[in-house]
Amino acid sequence: MNGPQDPRLPFLGLGNEQALEAMAEALPDGMFVTDLEGHITYWNRAAERITGYSRDDALGRSCALFTGDIESGCLCGTGPLRCGVAAQGKSTKSCIMRKRDGRAIPIVKNALPLYSPDGECIGAIENFTEVPLRGAPPPAGACPDGAGDLCRLVGAHPAMVSLFRVVQLVARSNATVMVLGESGTGKELVAEAIHKMSPRSRGPFVRVSCSALNESLLESELFGHVKGAFTGAVRDRRGRFEEADKGTLLLDEIGDVSPVVQVKLLRVIQQREVERVGDSSPVPVDVRLVCATHRDLKALVAEGKFRADLYFRLNVFPVRVPPLRERIDDLPRLAAHLLLAHGSPPLATGALEVLSAYHWPGNVRELENVLEYASLRAEGGEIRSEHLPDELHLGPRVPHQGSGRHDADAIRAALEGAGWNRAAAARKLGISRVTLWKKMKRFGIAEAGAGPGSGEEPDAGA
Image (cartoon, rainbow, N blue to C red; front, side, top):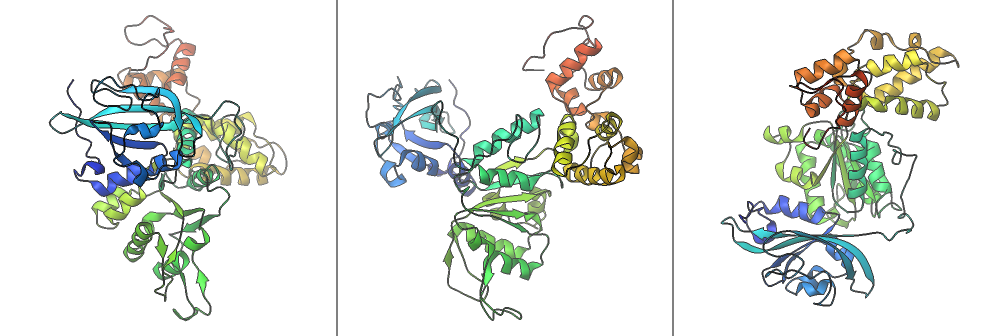
């Protein structure tokens, strides 16, 4: 077979080392690389954590280290690659791994041949995941909610289900996370959920709003200061990095950080220690970083307003939070949750229809404010449409920007505009392909060339 393009992994010394090493080290699953003889040439942090074998223990040794037995069920490659993959293709295996302390744990391991730029097979890259035993208790810090929800995040739309899976995945690691999304989407709640579901859940969760402080105040807030460092520094003060030791630090609106503070942040990330303002004695810190921004950091890097090296250090695991208009089907669930939390009266059907037709530029935060306003106007009674702010009645009511209540004309117009590509039409309508298919079936809308009311469920390529 023809080998794929060389992925330029850092352990092969082929360039892009800083960013690629950061990504490999941030993976929540164990990952290692072997040469053609089955000797380990790379071993990431998660592999150390899961197996108990340090990088020094693993490098250069046979992948038989993985189970302590060359005849183990995980080592079944028929070609020159000894750890579960032959040069002809990839493999996935469920098997038992023996940790350094002798304990056996079930894992799932994926293996793939690794090729050089000229197509020659030079080794294998493998990742493995520990599989929880059936009936095992949830991990410490887990925060299960009702069906479809996660911690304080609420939603059942496919976009939110996907977000929940990503949060659960990255929470298991120590990776730096970049939470992206428009203002008001709940980026802080995502960061909090990652912390609560992580091994650091018993440690502190500390938040800093980078946009609320000027450069000098932010520097002192993050790194602390010593007495006399500046006017008003009447005593020593620990910074937020020290306060977050053994826990998680959320840097909210990281895109607003000045170039001076960016340099100091980069130094902290690289050296894992801080220096208080006015002091030269480094203080070691053990902090998991989660950053959040509504800005396009790539564009800021291109404009020279954000350091590229810091960007790659922070953007190890990006997580996108969808705007409310893309998951408008969640609005009734969200509204009920917010009203219950504030002890407010319920919504009348007419009010819910108005809310569902609005485009929500301020996202969930705007929804919360609107509901608080309406509940006050309702004076303890049911919230009706006349209790809602005027802009909801007068503002944009565009179905393709997210209304979950689409009529047959809106569905047909979206399909025709997308050339009857259901995936594209669903994106325009702000609904999933399955929801679109159900609405097509309900309204008797057939695709071009299909019989009326075609009931064929959308396939994977739709």
